[in-house]
Length: 357
Image 1 (spheres, rainbow, N blue to C red):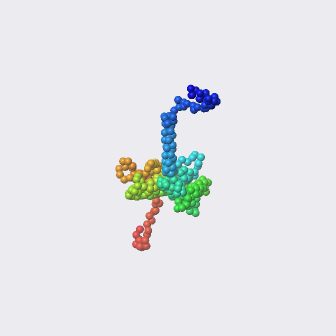
Image 2: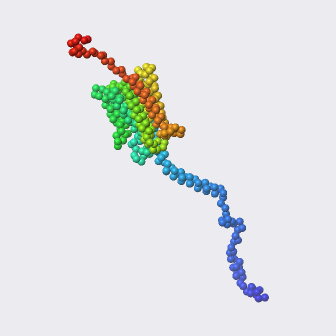
Image 3: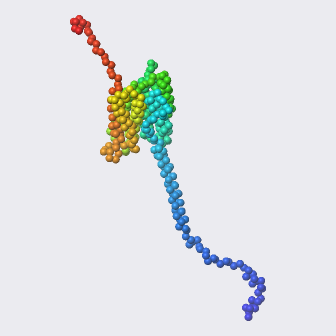
């Protein structure tokens, strides 16, 4: 048969080479194509959570950048209207001088003097704190000038107290921190001299009547400013910048007056022994404390029934009216009696001639 004969003529090596050729391995039956693979639900959950977390971080960072400056402005406004407590290891010859020095130190070491800040500083955007500090310094200047007159010597008002009064007055364009520091040093020098008998040491009995007149003048001044703002046309809600300034200036002077009354009362032994004077002094102290303790979250100057927001300026003006009346009454009661002048009958030449007695 031809096919068998042809097959017999092929070399044996040829058949072996064909058998030795590598053949492709069959595709494993357990292989699954990636096109049909499904991700794990757990990993999908983790991916969604991670994307949300990253998005939350981005939003938080954006809000932090936008709100950082306003937040710094709010946090930098700190008005310390707590009572001034003199430490037990400090002994002041004139108690009101100690109150003045502690008030200065509190403002400088606390929030800092807002008027000295550059334009970019958050405190430069504030209204309440600058008004509070400016009125505090002005009130301390007035009171120190009063002490200088009471402690006057043969050469005139005391030099250290007069210098402190001038330094406490703000000068436009000049930083207040160096002036306040120098004023505190002058006050301390006066108290040291007074404790050694080198300066006239004013007693509370001498200063309190004049202090009441000064405090009553403060109340009248601030009450007039508040009345102007209450009756002015409202341009902002719940209060304008001018409203806030008038309110906190009045509050600052009320706090200062109250603290000075408390300091003077502690050593006015000759006055507190009199029942009538003691009652009048307590009435003045309470009236000034009521005005000093007002702490509105937002100052409101709204005309109406006050169902939602009261009129804080009107309330402060009422408290100042009570404080003014109490201070004037006490000042009148403490005023020295007028000297009695004996009436001397004048005899004219005509009376002498006619013999009329």
